Image (cartoon, rainbow, N blue to C red; front, side, top):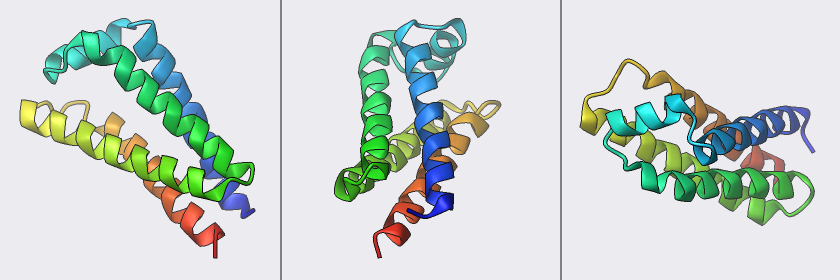
Amino acid sequence: MNVYYCAIGVITVAANAGIAVADLVKANFVVANSAEVKVPSAWLPFLAALKLAGAAGLLMGMLGWEPIGLAAATGLVLFFIGAIVAHIRAGVYHNIAFPAAYLILATAALALSIADSY
C-alpha cells in the first residue's frame, strides 16, 4: 500500500468518523449549519450513517478489500459534492470551506485508491 494512500486514508477515515459522531449527538454547530443550509435536523442520523459507512469502507479498502474502498471513496466524493451544492443553493458561503475540505480529502482518497490498485 502506498504511504500517501495510507496517510490520506487514515485522515479521511478519522475526519468522517468524527463529523459523523458530531451529527449523531446533534452538536450545536451541526444543527445550526444544517438549519442554515435548509437540511432538516431529522436527516442528521441518516447523513451520519452515510459518513460512517464511507469511513468504514475506506478502512476496509486499506485493509485489502480494494473494491469496497473504491466504492466508499466514490460515495464520499458524491456526498460532499452534495453538501457543497446544498451550501450554494442556500447561499451559505461563510463556512463552505468545511465541506470543501472533506471533499478534497475524499477526492484524494479516491485518486490514491485508484492509483494504488494499479
